[in-house]
Length: 266
Image (cartoon, rainbow, N blue to C red; front, side, top):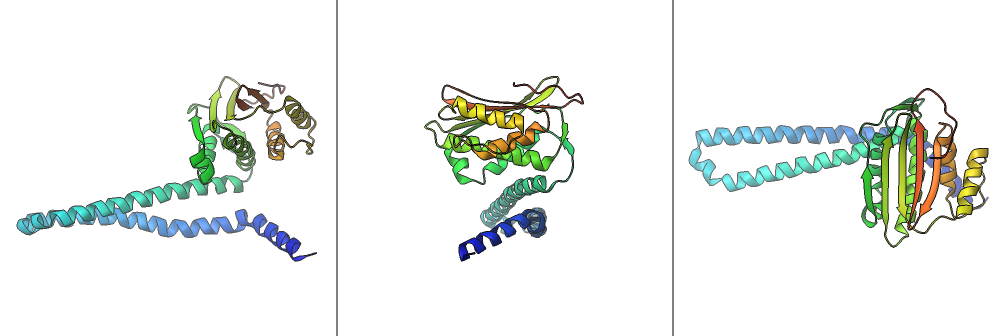
C-alpha cells in the first residue's frame, strides 16, 4: 500500500467519524460563546440606554455635547447585535443539517421545513449561492409524515445537488424547488435549466429503482440520484424524472396517510 492509499484510508476513517463524534462537540463549543455574545450585547444595549437617560437628567448640557458620540456607540452596538444574530442564523443552519444527519429512528417530518433547511444549507456552497438564480416556493400547510430525517436529508441533498450542478452548467443557470400536497401525497418538484436528460438514461435509472439494483452503467445521471431514489422508494414514493424544453424536473410524491397505495409515476 503506497502513501497515497494510506492517506485515503485515514481520510475515509476521519470522515466516517466526523459527523457523529466531532460535530456535536464543535457545535456545542460554538454555541456557548455565541450565546454569551448575544446575551451580553442585549445587556449592553439596555445599559447604554439607561446610562444615557441618567446623564440627560443629571447633566443635560454635557449629554447634549456628547450626543454625536453616544449615537455612534448606539450604532456600533446595534451593528454588533445584528452581526451576532446573523452568525446565530448561520450556526442554526449548520446545526440543523448535522442534527438531521445524526437523527435516529423515525419522526414526524414536514417536507417544506426539510426543503427550507436544505436550501439554506445550499448557500454554504458559494458557487450555488451566487451563480444560480433560485426560486423557492414552499407550501406551509403540507401535512407531516413519518420517516427517517437522516436518510431523507441525504436523499434530497443528493437530488438538489445534482440539479444545482446541472443548472450551473447551463446558460440560464436557473433552479427551482416547489412543495405542495393533495389528499394523499406531499410532493416535491426539483427543476433545473440545462440540456434534456436522455430518455434512455432515465429509463435505465427507473429500471434500477424498480428492481432495487445499486448498479447503474450511465454517466449522464449521477449515481447519487439512484441512491436517493432507492431510499425514497422505501416510502412508496411516486417518482418521476423528465425534461421539457430547456428544463429538467425531478418530482417526488410521498404518501402521508397510513394506507400503502401502489407506486405509480406522478
